[in-house]
Length: 74
Image (cartoon, rainbow, N blue to C red):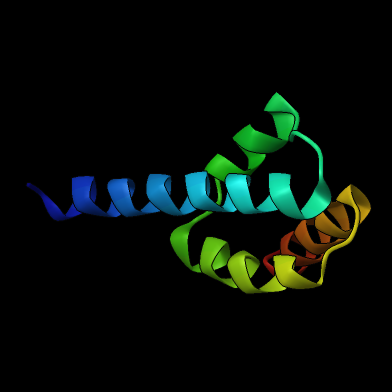
Protein backbone atom coordinates (compact mmCIF):
# COMPACT_ATOMS: atom_id res chain seq x y z
CA UNK A 1 0.00 0.00 0.00
CA UNK A 2 1.41 3.38 -0.95
CA UNK A 3 2.06 6.12 1.58
CA UNK A 4 -0.53 8.32 -0.14
CA UNK A 5 -3.27 5.69 0.18
CA UNK A 6 -2.31 5.08 3.80
CA UNK A 7 -2.52 8.83 4.51
CA UNK A 8 -5.91 9.03 2.78
CA UNK A 9 -7.15 6.11 4.88
CA UNK A 10 -6.02 7.75 8.09
CA UNK A 11 -7.65 11.02 7.09
CA UNK A 12 -10.93 9.29 6.20
CA UNK A 13 -10.93 7.35 9.50
CA UNK A 14 -10.21 10.50 11.51
CA UNK A 15 -12.98 12.36 9.71
CA UNK A 16 -15.51 9.57 10.33
CA UNK A 17 -14.64 9.51 14.03
CA UNK A 18 -14.92 13.29 14.35
CA UNK A 19 -18.31 13.30 12.61
CA UNK A 20 -19.55 10.71 15.13
CA UNK A 21 -18.11 12.70 18.05
CA UNK A 22 -19.63 15.95 16.83
CA UNK A 23 -23.02 14.32 16.24
CA UNK A 24 -23.02 13.08 19.81
CA UNK A 25 -21.55 16.24 21.33
CA UNK A 26 -23.90 18.63 19.52
CA UNK A 27 -26.88 16.25 19.71
CA UNK A 28 -27.68 16.76 16.04
CA UNK A 29 -26.75 15.32 12.68
CA UNK A 30 -24.26 17.33 10.65
CA UNK A 31 -25.38 18.61 7.28
CA UNK A 32 -23.94 17.01 4.17
CA UNK A 33 -22.22 20.33 3.44
CA UNK A 34 -20.51 20.27 6.85
CA UNK A 35 -19.50 16.63 6.40
CA UNK A 36 -17.89 17.54 3.07
CA UNK A 37 -16.13 20.49 4.64
CA UNK A 38 -14.70 18.24 7.34
CA UNK A 39 -13.72 15.58 4.78
CA UNK A 40 -11.57 18.17 3.01
CA UNK A 41 -9.55 19.05 6.11
CA UNK A 42 -5.98 17.73 6.30
CA UNK A 43 -5.17 15.19 9.02
CA UNK A 44 -3.31 17.65 11.33
CA UNK A 45 -6.35 19.96 11.36
CA UNK A 46 -8.67 17.01 12.06
CA UNK A 47 -6.43 16.06 14.97
CA UNK A 48 -6.70 19.60 16.36
CA UNK A 49 -10.47 19.49 15.88
CA UNK A 50 -10.69 16.21 17.79
CA UNK A 51 -9.49 18.07 20.88
CA UNK A 52 -11.28 21.37 20.27
CA UNK A 53 -14.69 19.74 19.86
CA UNK A 54 -14.64 18.76 23.53
CA UNK A 55 -15.38 22.42 24.31
CA UNK A 56 -18.16 22.82 21.73
CA UNK A 57 -21.77 23.13 22.84
CA UNK A 58 -23.41 24.29 19.59
CA UNK A 59 -22.98 24.07 15.86
CA UNK A 60 -21.97 27.72 15.95
CA UNK A 61 -18.91 26.74 18.00
CA UNK A 62 -17.87 24.38 15.21
CA UNK A 63 -18.41 27.03 12.55
CA UNK A 64 -16.44 29.62 14.51
CA UNK A 65 -13.56 27.17 14.98
CA UNK A 66 -13.49 26.31 11.27
CA UNK A 67 -13.60 29.97 10.27
CA UNK A 68 -10.78 30.82 12.70
CA UNK A 69 -8.66 27.99 11.26
CA UNK A 70 -9.38 29.17 7.74
CA UNK A 71 -8.36 32.72 8.67
CA UNK A 72 -5.10 31.43 10.19
CA UNK A 73 -4.15 29.57 7.03
CA UNK A 74 -4.61 32.57 4.74
